Image (tube, rainbow, N blue to C red; front, side, top):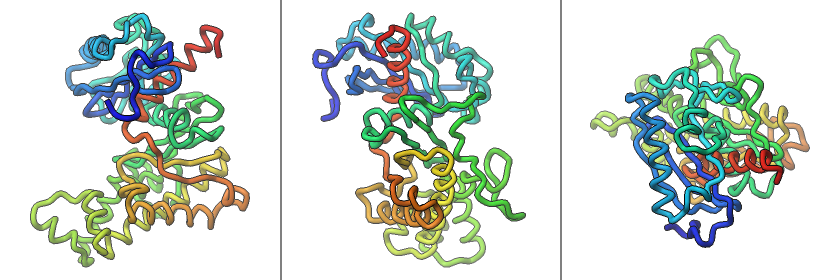
Length: 345
C-alpha cells in the first residue's frame, strides 16, 4: 500500500470500482467516496482473445481485488469503465478502437454490467483521466479542467462542473486533431488527415521528426546510439537533451511551441480554469530541469498567442495522478452517475 492509499476500514462508503483499458494492460482500482484509493491492480489486456473473454476476466479480477482489500462486493455501488475510442458512449458500445482491433462493435458496458451485477458507467479513456485529475488531482481546486495526454498520440479530457464533455457523437475533446497547420507540407496525422496537433506533439511525431533529421545529416548524439542498435524514442531524446544535444533540445522546444498553439485554440473555445499536461511524454515533469523547460516553452507560446485575460488567468501545469488517473477518474464518473440515479447528487 502506498502513502496515498487507505484501508477498507477507513474508506468512506459507498465504494466505486474503476477499470481503465489500455492496449497492453487493464488497470483496476477501488476508490472510496472521497476519491481515496483502497487497492489497485492490473491484468494483461490480451485483446487478441476477444471481448467476451476480457469481460469474464475483468469481472473475475474485480471480485479478486475486492477480496484482497477486504471489501464486500455489496459495498461497491457502481463500476466505471474506460476504453480507447472510437465509441458510442450513450449506447455503451465500443466501435473501432485503433489499438484493440479485435474489440469492435460490441456492447461492452451492458455486458460488463451483466457479468459484475453492477451498474456500469462508460467513458473515453482520456475523458476518464481528465475527470480523475479534476476530482482529486491537479485540477481539484478548479471548476473546469482540460487534461492533455501526451503519449503515442495526443488525447484530451474536458471537464466542466462535474461533467465530461463527450459530445453528441462521443467525439468531444478530440483535441489531438485540432488543426494547427494548413500548409501544403503539413505533417500527416495517424488518423490520415494533415496538420493536426498530434502530428507535431505526440511521441510518434517527435520520433519521426528526429529520424528524418538524422537521415538528413543533422548532427546529434542520438545518431551514435541509433547506429549502435538502440531504438530512437522520446526517452532517448530527453536523455540526450539533458546532456545538451542541440537537435534533441530543438525538437522538444518545437513540440512545446506547437502544443502551446493548440492550447490557445482549446482555451479560446472552452475557457477552462486550468489545462494540465499528462501522459508519458512529459520529459521528467516538474522534478526535471528539462520538464520545467518544456512547460515554460508551452506557457510562453500560450501567453504570446492567447487573449490577454486568458494569458493571465489560465493555469497550465503538469498533471499529478500519472497512470492512476484513468481508473480513479472512471470510478469518479461512476460515482456521479450513482449519486444522480439515487437522488443523492
